[in-house]
Image (cartoon, rainbow, N blue to C red; front, side, top):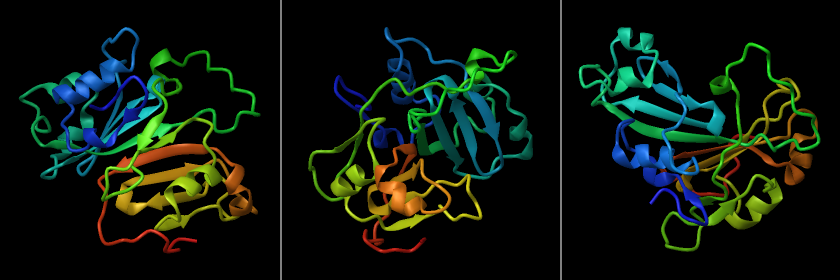
Length: 226
């Protein structure tokens, strides 16, 4: 199950096609009562396709099993992709799921929506917290629960040192610091950037969490990116 009464698990959705019943049911479950999700923003390229559900703060990435023809980049709706005649219909598999946290900077006043921005184009807040992240890639231990208010120090105490980390250089102030637990298939970007980004990262909330298929043979604890 991708969701329950207490938490939402994302990893079981990896490998599914856009039309897979389990993925369709998960998206419907994000509304109360369950209902079809808003029309996603579709961005298609030869090697990857993105479905951005902005009101749900959710983005799904799909990779084709074989390269897509260049004409696929003209796809403008999910209906196109669900058409059996569409070249991407049978070849796409979900490779990454991104959840955005717009409570990452609670002290900042929310920007007013642009007058001509459609509701489907505005970023909302993910409706089903907490997110359940596996605490171990090789055991059935209780999952780590990620809330919008979870800080860097709190997650580090639960998952241990990440395998990779980076970002936060003063030359790229818009890039937040990030940590990746490769063997768990979890990457987290934090709302801390610029000078002393790592020093302040322990108190920062997460800005985006990405889940992907765990990779073996890359032990946590290595400092590769900083």
